[in-house]
Amino acid sequence: MSARLLVELPRRYANGVRQGITSVCSAHPLVIEAALLQGLADGTEVLIEATCNQVNQEGGYTGMTPADFRTFVEAIANRVGFDKGRIILGGDHLGPNPWKHLPAKEALVRAEVMIDAYVRAGFTKIHLDTSMGCAGEAVALPDAVTAARAAGLAKVSEAAAAQTGFDAPVYIIGTEVPIPGGAMEELDHLQVTSPEAALETVEVHRRSFARLGLEAAFERAIGVVVQPGVEFGNHNVIVYDRGEAKALSAVLSKMPQFIFEAHSTDYQPQSALRNLVEDGFAILKVGPGLTFALREALYGLDNIAAVFADVPQDKTLRATMEKVLVGEPKDWAKYYHGDEGELRLQRHFSYSDRIRYYWPHKEAAAAVDQLLTRLEGKEIPETLVSQYLASLYPDVAAGKLSAKPHDLLVASVQQVLNTYGRAVHPSR
Image (cartoon, rainbow, N blue to C red; front, side):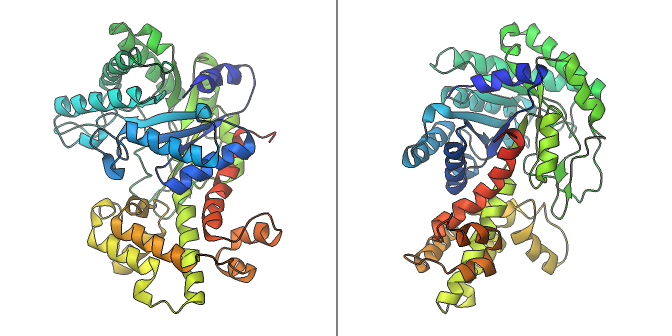
């Protein structure tokens, strides 16, 4: 679980090398499989990150602890033949977010337990995110408070790392951190982080780490989360405008220890992703965009299965997912707004892709298994691929891709990852 590649990113950028790495932020087994297969094809390391809400000492929404997640990823690596030594595990938004409804003291104690568990499980990329207020606090905290809390978590991380055989962790810091999973409102414009704010973020964290005697740990801080003007909401995507971020990009010359980490890059066109990398946003995070592509493919197969068999409407995958979503609305209700027709549309087709939280649900997983059973042993005709999975049709027609259901699902995710691969490694 080496982080050497990440450590090299700032130096390489400062020396004029405009390459980066894709951060795959998902716990879906087919997404992980697609990422590892893409790494095999490209001959690259694969960075896989779990968020504080997905995976924590209490199980998160996946039911996995950090140690469980590592075992889960390694099992998939063994199955597809990917070298586990080329996997970089990261912890995303590690801080009090899952417990922000509690008083800060209690929430931070739980965050410390989480950080300890991540580091002991071999996660070597640690994103410290203490930017959110807890019970009784403002939604956004002063930089000094955020940095002090981040340094406190780093102290726990360093103590845990000293007792493991893994590489010392590298850190991602930041105070202008997008919320996990995309924006909660309709967007038409974003305020790009100012160069002065980026510099101040670094300095306030440097001082906070130093106060705790963590100078050596701060030397392994390699990335800063800022807002480059990139985000997605339920209905729209704000595409990167490098002109708007020109001054922010230029400030990296004054902080050569760092590159930027770009969150919420899902759904960006390849040209925008490439511009981000060229402008110093060397870590491109993607999550909902991958499961969105997977959901498209699952619903395409659902339509194909209806052609092969007379499937009652209430037994389709989409109908089952609607039942599950309506029956347990806690993971989407506060994010989606409108009349019943609008809510139904968003539940299934929103860019925010909050349906991803429901795939592990027992009833949803059974419905996916039933769908694949209906198609078991069938080589899907090219004409149906063209009709319902059009983006995959060229490769199927050319004989480059098997028209078997599992292969089609993985390929749907790999198409997105290919876009990122060409952005972070343009010579590929």
